[in-house]
Image (cartoon, rainbow, N blue to C red; front, side):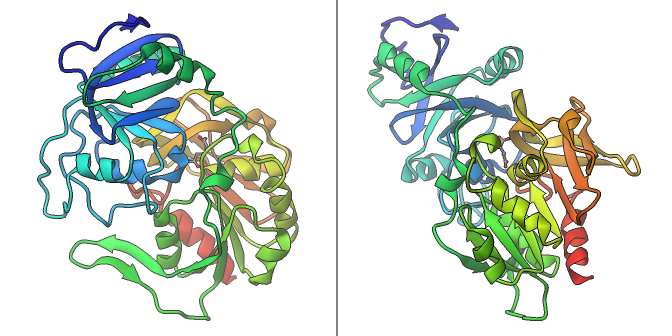
Length: 388
Ligand SMILES: NC(=O)CC[C@H](N)C(=O)O
């Protein structure tokens, strides 16, 4: 990896990654042309790149895929966790080849382009991942220009000027604009996504959308709930007006501690109702903050579909999907909260529950998409609580 200079792009380079420390990595651009600045993370999942790219928790991030063949099954209209990709771009090893899959309706390159997302291929993603592991997730810019013309000084300046994810409040930027009801179920081969009839006898979950993945709602619906989704800035009164049997706090991007005035104070009020409450990822971090725990930015974060987590009550190991760069500090949990799960990669807190309220949360993604389904029992556990 070379240092910033005004050098012409090497032969054939139509894309470049410029890190804030001056590191330059040349590659070939795909998808949209242009520039994007954000945090460079890595994800180790071997499948599910379209779900990763559309996960709203990746807002302001650029994903390095450690799996070398990305794009080989193309893109479809089903494997979407939101209407559009939220990751700003991706960095991959192999050039994107023609799709080979019966579900593909578009090449990954064309899909990225149509959605204004930048790709960089031909990168030594192992070296980049090692760099992130050693020095932490850096800020950087990826740029794609078909003529290979780049102003490296300007790109470096842009990478340096970007303030970083710490202190950045993004949940309200990616949240839905208005309330909606959700009735879809999970996908099965041959049938596609399921659909549940409107049924007022089902317990009602009001989900606060901080940047939610759709598969969470599909799992809630399949577990037997009626789901109403409200924007991140919904007030206590707005939530209660829907007469919830339980509250769900979604995943989402950015620094949980930066959500300031809208999330944590409302969650504190909702906890007072003693209605069952379940949080995932950002929702877990916000529940932690609401009870007085602290969150902190992690060195490199956890992103992948093979993260082992230990359930403390019985020692069972769950292989989980993860995507987080912040974490609740276990030592900061108050007396009325206890750890329920820990990461077997680094011992960090992966789940908590309150001892004086029916509230629990996990740092990982039981809805998978992509990833293993070891933890779907959590949706059933939550919906069972609502029925009691
Ligand atoms: N997937 C998520 O909800 C991520 C939560 C938070 N933005 C983090 O990076 O830790």
